[in-house]
Every structure is written in structure tokens, then in C-alpha cells.
Image 1: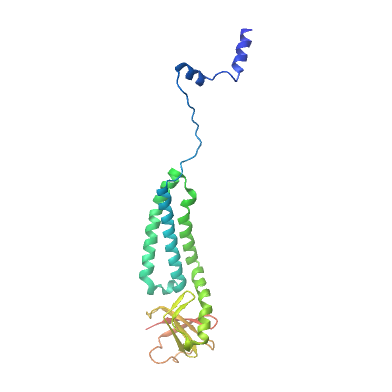
Image 2: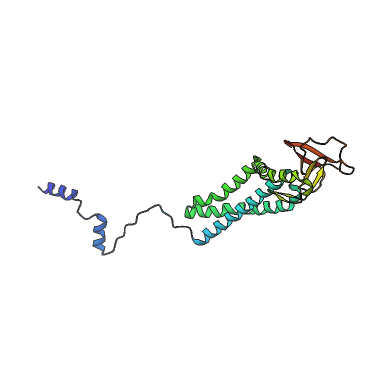
Length: 226
């Protein structure tokens, strides 16, 4: 009978646990803490720093994308200092970003925010490396340039799409749009020849060093050779 009573008492879920018993004996308040696996949210200083850095990286990528779309890699020599300045800032921010995100991931588990800068930079490199940006710049600028070429004598320098045109000249029943400085071996602009490219030797004296390379339909890229 004694053993049965003891067994019932052992299976009684209402019986005080050992931890409760110890608490009663010692007279101390016993607190049970469970690990929830959560981390405290990122502090405002980290959020502001990460947001500002990501914004600057995005602006640098956008500026360099526009520069590439407007000039193309082959013609960036005229904007070399601007391009270098943008790349230096972008490089500095990209060096600082891993330090910033390491703190965020380890201490605050900010995985999504930490992916912003890598996605922006990879998107920039993919757009430029694939030639998509340069092609998009041409598509945006082609229409305004064709409309100007229809009245080449009245056209003036200015922004055509994303191309900053320094001068517009009639040339051999066509129209020449100069977008870059005349540097030996460099691409200097685009020429529109609806009746075909002029033959060698047909250029006026002093500018026979222009070379026309077929580009798209009546459009030709213009290269300068001294």
C-alpha cells in the first residue's frame, strides 16, 4: 500500500518540482529564463550609417551608369577625371561596407540590409559588362539625333537623349555629331549618312583624318586619327 501511494505521488503532475521546492526552502524567488533566439534590433546609429552608405553607393553607380551610357567605355577618356573620381568614391564605400555589415550581421542579424550594396554593385557591373547600358544610351539618343539630322543646318549643340553633343555639322550630304574631344585614335561622335558613307579623299582639306565605321543603318561611328 505504501509503494502504491508513493507511485501515485510520483506521477502527480501537481506535485511541486525540485526547483520550486528549492525555492520554497531557501525563500528565494526563482526565475526561469528561456532562450528565445531573438536579437535586439539594430540601433539608430547603425541604421542611419548603413542607409547613408547604401544611398551613396547607389548614387555613385547611377552616375557612372549615366556616364557610360552617354559616352561609352571607348569614349570615356574625355571624362577621365570624372570617371576616376566616381570609381574612387565607389571603391572606398565598398571597402567600408563589409566592416559595417559584419557588425550588423553578427550583432543584429541585419541580413537583408547587408545585401543592398552588393546587389547595387553587381547590377552596375553586369549592366556595364554586358554592354546593356551603352546600348540603352544609344536607343534613347538615336531618335532625337535623327530628328536633328533631318535639319542638320539648323541643329545646334546640346543634350540629345543622354548624349551631350559639342557640335553639329553638315558633312558630305550627311550630319556629324561630335560628342568627344578630338584625341588620336578615339571615338569622337556619330555621323548620319542616309546616302552612304563618303569615299576616302572626299573630305575637305584638314579633316581627312576622320574615319567612319558602320554602326547601325545610316549611322556611323566617327574616329579621329592624326
